[in-house]
Length: 146
Image 1: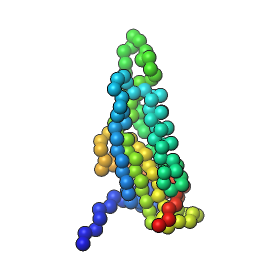
Image 2: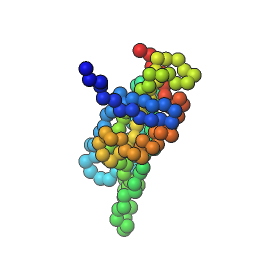
Image 3: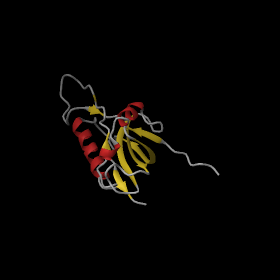
Image 4: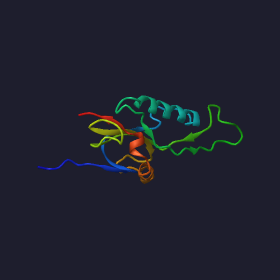
């Protein structure tokens, strides 16, 4: 019998297993024009709002994305906002631990995490992993019951 493959991620005070990973292009559907700061804000708000209460009774955790300005022609401003891009892929992951968070009931704890990276995972971008290693699992994770 083989053991199922796992992907353990180290948070500050807990190791958790990756249970689900969905990835899509950040600008899928953008047919014309440049991404902007305003568009990026809408993408992020939609992602975070769409994952709310989907799992674990807590909001998703967003790894703050790096936004890169896009240079345009100096002789005229871009008419649709401030051009800037996020990394090319959106990653939405569900992590679980079979230990409840400190001070909460449940059979285990889990957290939905949203981040952006340039290439398809796995692997998860090193900068994202370093960030998650500083995240307090007990503060952000919610409970689940089997």
